[in-house]
Amino acid sequence: MSRLSVSLPGLHLKNPVIPASGTCWYGQEIARNYDLNKLGSLVIKSTTSQPRKGNPAPRACETSAGWLNAYGLNNAGVDNVVQEKLPWLAQNYPELPVIASAAGFSEEEYEAVAAKLGTSPYVSAMELNVSCPNVKYGGLAMGTDPELLERLTRRCVAVSNVPVYVKLTPNITDIVPLAKAAINGGAAGLTMINTLTGMAIDLKTRKPKLANVTGGLSGAALKPIALRMIHQVRQFSNIPIIGVGGIETPEDVLEFMMAGANAVEVGAASFHDPLACPKIIDQLPTVMDYYGIEKLTDLNEVRF
Image (cartoon, rainbow, N blue to C red; front, side, top):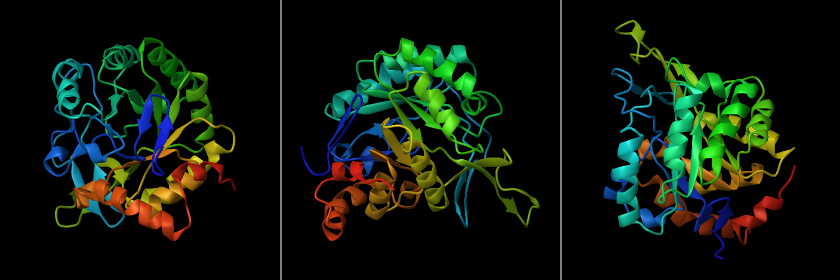
């Protein structure tokens, strides 16, 4: 076991760095920039039962605090993903663990999508995206109600052959009841956190910069919030956590793991630099040496 490797339910990772859902689509795009075998894993685009075009343009803009996006769950649809996208990844990168991402607009849709993704032989684990703030109905409502979240998690776990990770929203007052609901529903792990709902205005047009008016804020502004929420959950549970939110450097990775994360996902950093993930991976051993960290799993013992 190397000093960078980590193990989570369903995922044996050579390093803890994973492109976040929505940032690499189905792998083909980022494969033009670097060898995907560098990665610990990747999360494919959040997938619904039918193909979706998503929200109207403009649906992304940069702000002083990070990126706002309102893509609206645009995706290829679960049948295309299972029949074409996942086999392409398996054929070209057979050693790369792939995390699917299930989304929907009803409990029944989530369950149906989770059943197809979670029984694919090319999927190692699955995220439930119950925290997308860019659609009017669906996951976010379920992701903010502990009772609904527990029931939804239980239904999806029951139809999946792979471990299920629930991606929690920060758009709430207290993350703890939601984390407990996901755990009670049988989640094998948590992904923390998704984007914060935000807004930007164009002074020239006197209109919102996004056609959807609001969108999900990602980038460095999320990091202190994500660290705090991961720390809160780690106080009462040892459940595996994949940390996400504002990770841009190897130092960020170490902070997340000290807060209680077991692996990390990199999102908005890849918008500025498509090589953000491999750069973080390459630099991680040097930064670990600087801070006297022999192996990443040693940070699991950090508590404060």
